[in-house]
Length: 114
Image (tube, rainbow, N blue to C red; front, side, top):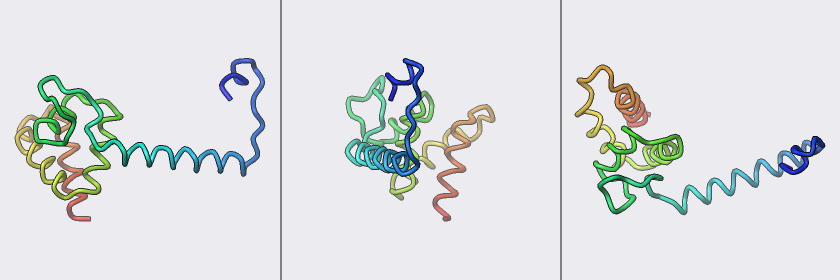
């Protein structure tokens, strides 16, 4: 598809073909998320990729979209990780400029009540 776009010739996919491709990509992304249960980033001072308190703090502080998506999925599925996120964010809640920590605290507490 990219080769045809770069050549100036757009692909004319039918709606069923587009839906099939979308479903295929969703399945691939789901397999990737299940196969890779780490934090999605290399940490400065950690030699693993599990969601420990230090890793969660690192992901929230300097993570990118991919690592945040993995943390988001972990918060949605695991009450243990949700409580760790709340614990990490509690240490930063006094800083009004730590907006990432405020976001994650609000999201994790909302998920805990949902």
